[in-house]
Amino acid sequence: MKKITITLTVLMAFTIFVNAQTTTSPTTPLVSKKGYTILPQAGDYAIGIDAVPMLKYAGNIFNNTANNTAAFNFKEGQSIYLKSFIDEKTAYRAKVRIGWDTKKNKELILKNGETEADQTVEDIQKIAVKNFLVGFGKEYRRGYGRLQGFYGFEGALSYGANKTTYEYGNDYTSIYPAPASTDFGSNKIGTNRVLTDKAGSVLGIGLRGFVGVEYFVAPKISLGGEFGWGLVYQRTGTGEKEVESMNFGSGQSETTTTEVAGGNSFVIDTDNMAGCIYLLFHF
Image (cartoon, rainbow, N blue to C red):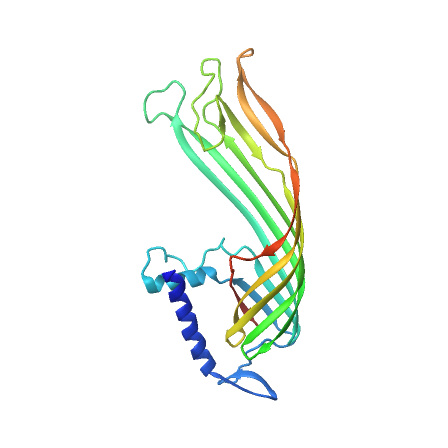
């Protein structure tokens, strides 16, 4: 609560300062004292990012907390916001997310038959996650001075998938029917172990209406937030899991592949109740 109070105090103080720098008249656009146009005009473009990480960092600076090591967390903002202004009151808008996350975890484990601590082999876990989204819509604006309200509609398509694979340094043998291997968290099923765990890909389509507000803290720079109401349909495809085990009849290892059922969901609800705040730059 203290962080929020400090951050809001800083924003209010900054708002009072920038208001003092504004001049306008009934027949001219809103401009700063230096003559720069504050609000977007026809033909302008805008690009935006999630502002929450920056606000957290500002609050941390003032209360001397230990977690203010970075002003921007790359993964905290999930989409890039884009706008193209038809005129001062109307704009096309788009959202784009291209996420491709790969991770490799390695663990050393004692080699089969060895007792010395330095006689080890390597187990490897590889994780690949994909998230893609593209959205397009139209917004209508109105307001007074730096404070601008907006509303409109948009649609979006999304795709997500993840796959985890495992490589083991110790093999199954007749002498070692239960070879030592690393427990990465969910890869061991008794004496069996997972080779591949592939979730079904998720396809989504959504349509929403939205309403929000922006405040221009400086010429062509605004802080904004919005709420929406809409529907989303998602379909999860069939996944598969490949498990390695010991075949005591042959004395060798064998693999078994099983399907993981998918499904679908349909949701109608409000969104963004967490109060995401984004920062927009117009040019």
